[in-house]
Structures are given as C-alpha cells and as structure tokens.
Image (cartoon, rainbow, N blue to C red; front, side, top):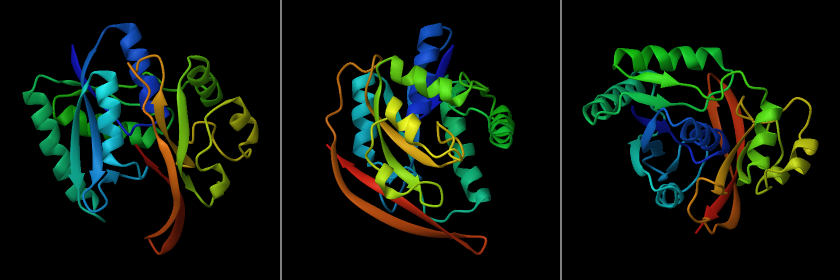
Length: 226
C-alpha cells in the first residue's frame, strides 16, 4: 500500500515513520510538509524549507511542499488541502501516516477530511504514553533539538536543547513530554532511518507574537541553518 506522511521534520513524525517502516505494511513514498509562503519555513516550527529537503535526501524519500499564505482561515486552508489530497490520490497514494498522539478533535478532523478524499489515515503513535514515546525515541538513537517554544509554557532557555533524558527531567510538570499540546517543536537531524546525519548549525533566537481571538501568544524560535 502506497502512503505519504504528514511531515514537520520533528520527532513525532519521525518516530511514526520509524514504526511504519518497521511494520512493513505501508510503503511511504513521500513526505508532505506545509510551508509558510512568506517566510519559506515550516508552519509553526519555523524550520527552513532547506532542512526538510535535506531530511528527505537522507531518508531517500521524495518531498512534497505546499506553500500556504499567511493568516489563512480554515475554509481557505481546507481548499488547499482538498486540492493536495486529490493530487496525492492521483499519484496512487491513498494512505497517510500521522504523528498525532492524543488530540481527539484533531484526529477526527483529519479522518473526516481525508476520508472524503478517499485517503485512509494511520496513527502509529496513538494513545501511547508520551513519556514512553520520548524515551523510546531517545533509546533508538535519534538526535533532535528544540526549535520552537510556546513562551507561556516554556522559556527560551529550552531552545536548541537536545532531546535526551536530562531534558525529560527538566521539563515542567505542566508540559507534555512530547509537547503534544504545542508546548515545543523539534527538528530531527540523525537517527537509524537516516542514511547520513544532517549537519545543522544553531543560529539566532527569534521571538514572534500572534493574536488569535483577541489574545496574544508569544513564541521563541531557534533558527537552524546548514
């Protein structure tokens, strides 16, 4: 069965891909990444698109990038995704792998939209304890760094930190170990499914604020370069 994977470059999608490759039931033929058209970076993660290209090259999997305008509303987003899912279906990719863990509303949304496009969603990490998942990710030998933090949950000192057992101990109690509530995002630069490591450099820390439904939200980003 031919599949693509929702790909942000972070640990959850990487571990989901690892498990799918291990199970050998799906052939993952493409990474699928949404990119900010204005900033040329992964939406929410702030990772440069060139880093996603390098991941794809190291994985030996093709990469499909979709460039989205800033501040698009859900109807417009859905229109973009409907078009892209139709293209995937035409290519014979009628299965998709998602790295979601426990957000019920998000899973329901994905399944409804994908089903209408004739695509079946797979959730290999679903309902697995997030501490166990992060420990498994580390034990398998993956290397990743934190590239984005929600400043209402974590301060900028966590930016650039390696995902390791020390990090698990340092995360505040209110933060999910995998950042499933958006507390942080990561970038994976090495591990068993990569043919070669991605040589990243940590650059400047950038802060940005966004307003949603009258509330301001602050985020910190670690700019990674090759």
